[in-house]
Length: 539
Image (cartoon, rainbow, N blue to C red; front, top):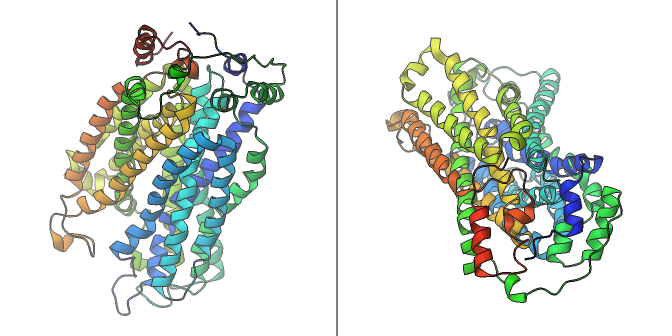
């Protein structure tokens, strides 16, 4: 039975943590830093876009983006991301991780700049060009998900692989934080240079002409970190697992990894293998019997997680207003509003988002992916119901701080939980020739959940009384009932987690069954499948 691992892959699995590991984390992580900055910075400037392009003379409140425009501006990048995850995930398995990795980064750089240069003087033309560039920006960002995860998993040793992949994803937290901090710096600089009265004093004068530069600068700066890491991405060699297992070039894999690990690795002679054992394709009966439930598990948990995760953003404006972080819009000028929103989002990122990610990095290889994901879904369920059932209690002014604490804890356990593990696991449990594709399918499923969470719940959470719903929206089921639905979504995520195997401490080839494929007897295939379905960690 061909159980012995290829020498170069074994060398990677048992390698001590070295400088090249941290270099790979930074190179891949800066892509995720940029992804998060670009995806989340738009929420900092949507209010400003409404004031600039949708001002209504004589209105009691500042202009806001109409519901359809708001959905387009915020949602088009999600649609692009979903498409990019599927396309670049597939392409990463066909062409190789490295060749495709540079494409996604250049697309992000070009479209970040294009977003800021959205042209035209009318609202319609500016929003149309902004949406065009943000779709393709999302397309590039989508490619970064499967490629970054796959590259990091294939470079890592098996002892700390989970922490390394999670560290790449954790850079998302710093991207969100950087977006908020940069928006604070820009808005303060403009506020000091261009003084303006509040909207209620002077509706027209409250939005100075120079405010149009603010949102453009904020969205364009996302191109910088991506551009700075392009050279280093191009210098990275192709991963040994792709070169050896997919391209079948053992000599090149040994040469590349000898340079990276700075040790001599002998290329192994080519072996005659049973062609039928390795011939099964994606979604063949053999694939479905080996990995079908695993793919269902990774895709469904990511889908359910993102419904809950992205819908939580709906409640931010109510929370921020309730605790006085964001006063009523009419009491501020346009630049002051950007500053207040950026400050509030930065505080949330600093207090709950970033710490949650790094708790996962610290503990994922100690307690395992399975335990962290179950725990995260469990506590998200608990806090969602704790917010929902006594919702009227939390609306009283004296109890609002408690509401903020509970809300922050749901974010913390999303990030110290399924938001990180759903990214890590698909990069570990599938064969090398399908790894990027399967991660792309799983992450695209998540982004579909994000669209449901961000826009489905935007309508669902509206007040039951249409007269009290936000302008332009139909009546919904109310925030309390929306929170109860989200609690049920988290319960489903908890149970679907049982479809996902534990990868802690095991090699990628052991998890995917690639060590067993060269023999291919029915008995061995069955043993491999039962072995890989374990959800409890090995000790």
